[in-house]
Length: 501
Ligand SMILES: Cc1cc2nc3c(=O)[nH]c(=O)nc-3n(C[C@H](O)[C@H](O)[C@H](O)COP(=O)(O)OP(=O)(O)OC[C@H]3O[C@@H](n4cnc5c(N)ncnc54)[C@H](O)[C@@H]3O)c2cc1C
Ligand SMILES: *[C@@H]1O[C@H](CO)[C@@H](O)[C@H](O)[C@H]1NC(C)=O
Ligand SMILES: *[C@@H]1O[C@H](CO)[C@@H](O)[C@H](O)[C@H]1NC(C)=O
Ligand SMILES: *[C@@H]1O[C@H](CO)[C@@H](O)[C@H](O)[C@H]1NC(C)=O
Ligand SMILES: *[C@@H]1O[C@H](CO)[C@@H](O)[C@H](O)[C@H]1NC(C)=O
Ligand SMILES: *[C@@H]1O[C@H](CO)[C@@H](O)[C@H](O)[C@H]1NC(C)=O
Ligand SMILES: *[C@@H]1O[C@H](CO)[C@@H](O)[C@H](O)[C@H]1NC(C)=O
Ligand SMILES: *[C@@H]1O[C@H](CO)[C@@H](O)[C@H](O)[C@H]1NC(C)=O
Ligand SMILES: *[C@@H]1O[C@H](CO)[C@@H](O)[C@H](O)[C@H]1NC(C)=O
Ligand SMILES: *[C@@H]1O[C@H](CO)[C@@H](O)[C@H](O)[C@H]1NC(C)=O
Image (cartoon, rainbow, N blue to C red; front, side, top):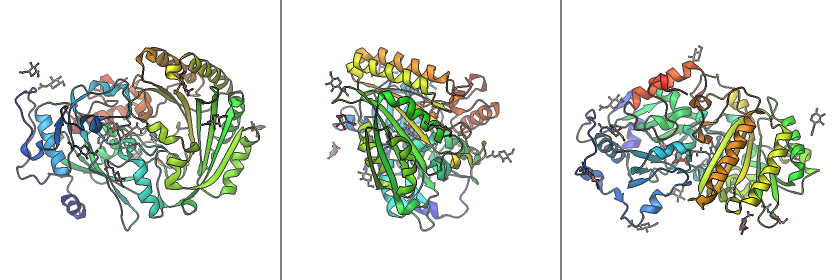
């Protein structure tokens, strides 16, 4: 395999020309021509809408303000990906790379009648002797954690099995082990990418360090990632994590927030992670709250935290769960349900320093009424993720493009979900209104948004940081690696400093 032999080369060049029989030349952009045809080497990996599997190969999680595609390109090798990109950029086609397909920002809507680059064939996780892992860009978290967990290792990953490991890393990568190991992107050692013109590059601390810096937090902007290499750690508690799921009536929301606030902040135990869900129970039609606690350690340690809630919970279920099974078993096994594809998902999010109890009482009552009044959107929900931050704060603020090392606390995430567009405006104004209300009590002067959770309407500085030096650095990398703006579908870093918002 070319990929493996190149990997083994010591002292890798800063830019590796792909081993094409016809050497790559710099790309001249031509207007889109109807007569132009894909190179014969890759044409058989390209399909149009007449292909029976077109829908399956292009379906994404959300259909809200979604990109649209005329063609799907499913390369099997890096060489094919490179040639396809060279062809597409020469012909000024628009495209979007897909790892897990769970990106939902409304900015993706700028890609219309494009080519979807489906990366499902790059589906491997190789554990190396030194404990590092080499991960293909089509891998989902659910598959990655099985391989890594089986090897007795761990790293910080997202909570849902269906999300693309690479897609999540590009925006930072938050998860339950971030208190111990930092973000998924903080574990990244090396990335291999194809630029718009087909040129293959690598980036690490030593090679293209500017690109490596930018990939970790704004990585959707510069090229198609082919492969990533991560550091991993020995499994916590032999890979067994304490999991507790508690349910509550909505009348207890203020107590839940008081207890949570007492635990969070700088002192949160690095092994501790909370996920809360607010949703309408289909059986009772009442608003219900689930508090999930996962502790990367022994049961007795985790139970200390559960006890603070369990004297007023309606139900409690606790057990030890293998790390690789958390995505399917935690939160009462409901997370895979969040993977359901093809709905309109209209999400708003923000980072909040504390959870102001009275606002949550007001919100919970309002949500309950909203879901009753709008049965077409009664699968909508609210989520809060509260994970420890020691591992994130362990790195200097300027270590990577991720700008929230000092502000990452509670993630409030409103998930509007529906299929019938007649309820769309009501959903949008309800959750947008609450995003803005929660901002008035979030403890921060300026809006702080985790890039992967952004709706797409926020100022870019809320996602990438308000510091001028960050804007300059990101814009410079954008202009160096994506000078024609082919990777502008996802919270595009401006090529012009004046365009920062
Ligand atoms: C149900 C659900 C659960 C989630 N849970 C978490 C979580 O626990 N932690 C967390 O951090 N985030 C989480 N997220 C957010 C998630 O990180 C983002 O939605 C992310 O964009 C998803 O990546 P993907 O590969 O699945 O999506 P995609 O739609 O495939 O990709 C998203 C964006 O990244 C670009 N991209 C993808 N692959 C590549 C590549 N190889 N090279 C270049 N660009 C690429 C795409 O072009 C697109 O612009 C969750 C999202 C959902 C819907
Ligand atoms: C491809 O684009 C990159 C980034 O602009 C550039 O550095 C490189 O020289 C280009 N490759 C070729 C073969 O022109
Ligand atoms: C390439 O396409 C974009 C829109 O997708 C357009 O703005 C631009 O002018 C085109 N460039 C050329 C050279 O045709
Ligand atoms: C290309 O084809 C489309 C329809 O398929 C047509 O609308 C458009 O005018 C054609 N463009 C050129 C330059 O011939
Ligand atoms: C469509 O996908 C199925 C598997 O999902 C496969 O068996 C079938 O061969 C595919 N069809 C085509 C035309 O490739
Ligand atoms: C990816 O590999 C896993 C095994 O690790 C397999 O279960 C899964 O079906 C593969 N996905 C695709 C899209 O081929
Ligand atoms: C929060 O902590 C304070 C100070 O330790 C304590 O007085 C209060 O009872 C705690 N509140 C809850 C709800 O646990
Ligand atoms: C919904 O309520 C019913 C009845 O109280 C209960 O049995 C069920 O577990 C609840 N569902 C969830 C997901 O909590
Ligand atoms: C949503 O409303 C529909 C129609 O009234 C109902 O069938 C369904 O059970 C409701 N779902 C929830 C989660 O309440
Ligand atoms: C961060 O800033 C320090 C101090 O100015 C500097 O030495 C270091 O190189 C910077 N790190 C990065 C990754 O830019």
